[in-house]
Length: 269
Image (tube, rainbow, N blue to C red):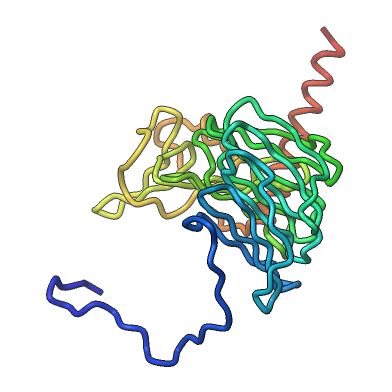
């Protein structure tokens, strides 16, 4: 589909949406999230006020938990809220907006997310740091990403945490351990299978370009990257399509195999 400069702007069909309720905040709103099970809505404004509403739009609570609120989140069942501040604060709030715990990061926080039943809370900072805490505020794991993740979300139906940068990076990690499941973006990375204009396939190695290039059509799984690096010029290979869960299982097996070799080498040294 192409767009013409003379094409009329899209117009919503009359009666397609009906306003059920509205709320006037004290300052321009900055964000809003929905608790899918409880139907509650959490909003916050430029003056760093939080507004918690029920499914009918009735105000259940209002608070200013941080002096410089950067992001907020709400569990799907409404059992907990998360807040993150521009001074590195991260905390969990009870349903009545009273604080449960608060921690401080080394750098300003940019995004926060809580899993559907408030078992874990994730926060990212401005330097690419990613931290996950349990319901009591204990740090479960931390990881570093090439770019700050400005958007975070737990997958309700699977044990994964998704993150997206403002430009050119999307990642998926295991929510329990922080292990990388996959990463994709505009930047080219090792193992990417690209297709040239004449139909040739190119597998990018460690000396490939950092951004741009031919369209990427597939990705060599993490478990096979070391084998990819050991190929000789002209050697023939065959690609086999695998599902995501298979790739994760193979990567775990490969890591266990490498760890076993490490244990044996240390025992003999």
